[in-house]
Length: 266
Image 1 (tube, rainbow, N blue to C red):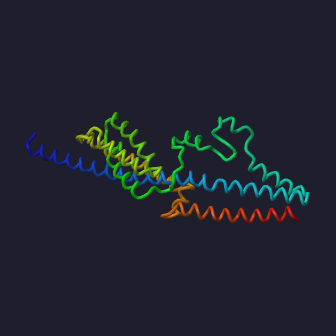
Image 2: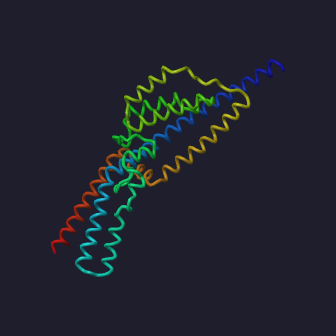
Image 3: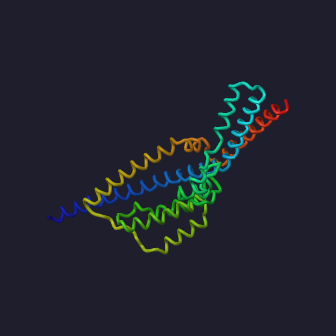
């Protein structure tokens, strides 16, 4: 092999290495965007249930009581049927809590049960969207420790486990915990991945392309979900949207309570 041919091969390999590095960087940025949105969707879902769930439950109870009051007044079979249906819609399934050994009560999954099923902290997130400081630390940390930066199986497992802790701290909006994790990562072993050569680089590019397709599907599923759609509508302040919806529900509750009081007094 001539020196010129060797030099051409080295240049081609160098271009391929740069292409792989660019693809890895782009993929990680895309995954950060998907993961931050997923965490916001999960936080929004949890806070939606905790803050609005009791209000929806109260509304359902009032609807049942109103239907029962109407049926008691008219005695009409159709009103009695509507009252039974309204009551049945909010009655808990018999002995369902025993089936789930305390994980489920009349209001749904308990915080402990929810955490067991979703592998999340029992602690409720303080906000839907973590603060700017937490978001900045999170992004820098993920860029450094992301599992897609290595092809070694053992190192990938280590990074996966570490990234799980990072995601949990970010979901809580815990900037202090994220700083501690960043320091822990900096103290760890130097695992800067060595670049592969030749066919391994082509295989790496193919894997990265496939990974991007999977992430695109996951992003589309999140955006198309009911909670994802609500979160997009909320704009920059999803917590304010929850407060506004809660205010609307409280007004509906007040209206239904007044209606029920009128029926009972009449």
